[in-house]
Image 1 (cartoon, rainbow, N blue to C red):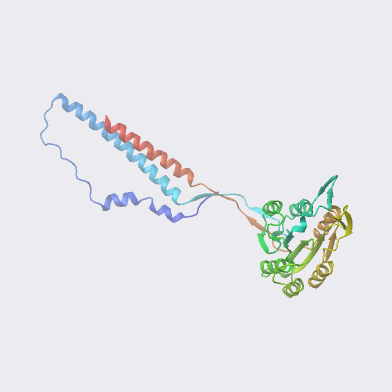
Image 2 (image 1 turned 90 degrees about the horizontal axis):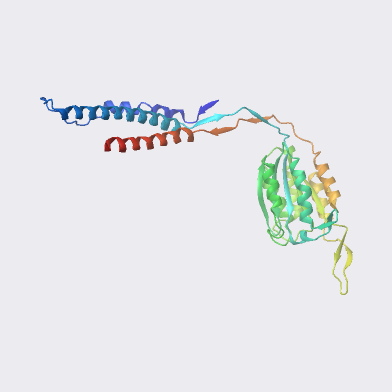
Length: 328
């Protein structure tokens, strides 16, 4: 159906007629009372008839143009059919570590070795695509924590911004506590049972103003559940004096990550390879949704440019008629 966003603009339709009766008429040149019937007079009368016909056409076209302009000013819109939006009630904030250590290449896809961030993008991207009905937000953190995407149903944009993220863009260090604090701030005014923060990091807290445990205490008070994921292989390769050697990965502060999850009612996961990371996200898919009333919307398409365009064409045509008609 068609609706008008500013229907009061239609009250301007009779404005030209009102002005015609209110304002005084323009002075016209009076013809002589006595006319001499010469042949030239017949030619003048013919020219006068053509001018009157042209003026009638111009008046009709100008009236149509005015009606179209008023219709455009009333902002006509096409209101589409009502569409239902699936809503599970979950509000998920995904916090991804972009510190320098995420460049460590200890993950593999087939025969290709990839770094940790590439593995996160690959698996988390699929996780995000399955979030239909959830509102999803994205926090990127390194030395500082930044809100990349607020909570939104537009999961395509969230995934795009995750895929475009770069290692070190937020600093080389790791501010886990600040990332949790930013998540608390963005989720604090929402339903208690639906708020979840998924924190993914490959190291320990080395920067920021808030200690991770203190941030977890505040999150617990706010009813925010945090799931933590430690990403990184069990053994990492380190350069030696003569050759590289395999050493145990001790960069991940599993004790702190476990404490954060347990204090907030969440759970800690360890992702040593892409298969484990994929399993973790599959488990997170099973988070209990909160019953909410279904939401719906009706798509709206603006139509004002159609009457506006036709009005401009008519005005141009009137200008051409006046220029050609008066020059003859």
